[in-house]
Image 1 (cartoon, one colour):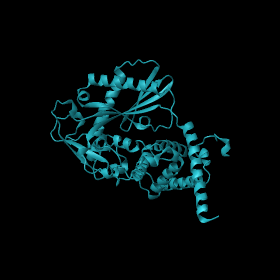
Image 2 (cartoon, helix red, strand yellow):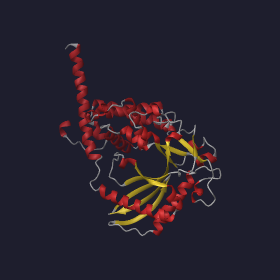
Image 3 (cartoon, one colour):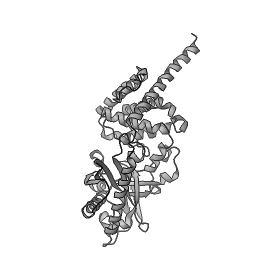
Image 4 (tube, helix red, strand yellow):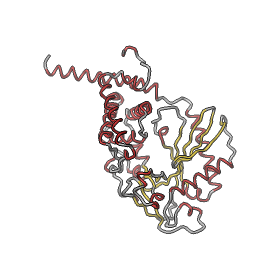
Length: 384
């Protein structure tokens, strides 16, 4: 056999393995990550609660009436990245500083992707919004969280909620979110409400536009300040006053646009989240999305992400994840010098890197191993 023919044969075998892996992953995807058919009923329950809450707050709180802008639907369900049935809904309650109030925004050098916001002139003593600011006129995340929590608790205490199939409602709190746990038709639904402030990104100077590909200027001008409490290793970088004043900067519209029209990418992210759960890797879903963002930066064209390349692209995603783990570094897409792996130990990163390397090697040799990885019965015995 001449050299050129041998090369073509090897290439053909390699392509066949990628196609075989694509076929298997598609089978797994259909079984593992399909949403249930009644999700629209749960959406109606969600909309009912949100509208009732908004009307209650408008009638009871002048500050809410002055500051509330809209709801913003976010999280894996609304981004099309959920890997299980739709029982969790993430919603931002978006507030904005009134147009007649001028303010400064200061992006922090450490930690990056955080900022403070300060009014240029203090509010009057009797202004109901004044309680959200400290004595130096900084907007304080903890004050917003406490105020918003009191609104949610008052809403639950004073409102008699009636809806077909609604059996029970409980409240819990975690980080910046107030969670309504709703028992509807014998299924628990979680509605995570997070208060955020909208911000015109023209106030920002340090976020990196050049790292984004094929996204609109409008998405880059709109961002949120999220009152997410700083983890210990980040809060140690700031004074105690600055810790209370620091807000996480989030560009959800930009993130959505990066993933838009990359056909095979969302299924790959879902499969990676499912694999993460089965392997019990301590990696937030957001980290998986960020790895996807960097892959899109390297390969921005829609043609690269066509569905026919699912098997090959899944392996490329695993290889990219292994590369980040080996480097012990995953940069924020808009603040690349901020390492999202800061809270994971070197040992944890190394163990995941070794495991992923073994998965890559085995999948390239034997695509059928994917069934074992995802704990799915072999669905086509012709593959045995």
